[in-house]
Each structure stands twice: as structure tokens, then as C-alpha cells.
Length: 125
Image 1 (cartoon, rainbow, N blue to C red):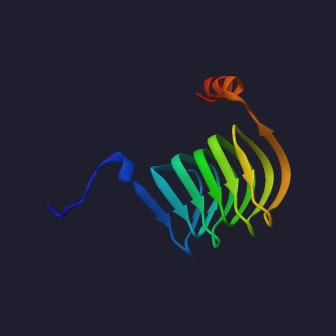
Image 2 (cartoon, rainbow, N blue to C red; image 1 turned 90 degrees about the horizontal axis):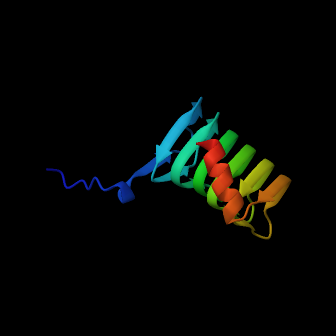
Image 3 (cartoon, rainbow, N blue to C red; image 1 turned 90 degrees about the vertical axis):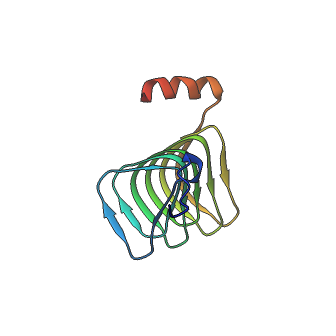
């Protein structure tokens, strides 16, 4: 009636600048975080932390692009990318890790191959 398309590929969520969420959050599709999240996040799809975005807690996601600040533990099933001027402190495991020049990365990384990834997915299921 209103022309909304309900395909899963078009799922989109925004946590706007100035917003603050505390607790456990679950997102599907593309999620853009411009505000503050404190707690555990499960994102089935792309999680984009914008320049004004901040996350403190554990993140489990398909794919991560960070332009803002993350403190905690990250499990990315496909890829994690930290853009210039982003800030990360904590531990991360993923099959592909990209850290752009100018990004601040303070922590431990475990870049897993496909076989290790399958084992991690079975353990996390």
C-alpha cells in the first residue's frame, strides 16, 4: 500500500547520533551505528560503525566496517575493516582483517582460515 519493499536484502537499521542503547541488541541486514551502544551485539549482515559511533562490548557479526570507536571483543564471520581515524581496543577473530593507515588498533587479532572458521561457527552455534 505504501510502496515498502519487505525483502530481507533491504533490511536497514540506524542507531542515530545522540542515541545511547545499553544492553543486548540483535540486528538483521545493514546496521549503521552513529550513536553509542554498550553491551553485546549480534548483527546478521553488515555492521557499520560511523565516525560518531561508539561500541563497548562484544560484537558478533557477518561483516564489520569501523569508522568510529570500538572497545571489546569482535567475532566477524567474513571480514572486519578499520578505516583511517577509527579506534579499536580489544580482541578480534575473523578470516579477513583490513586496517587502514591512520587507524588505531590496540589488541590481539586472530585471522582464521576457512577450516578454523567452520570450527568456530560450530562452537558458537
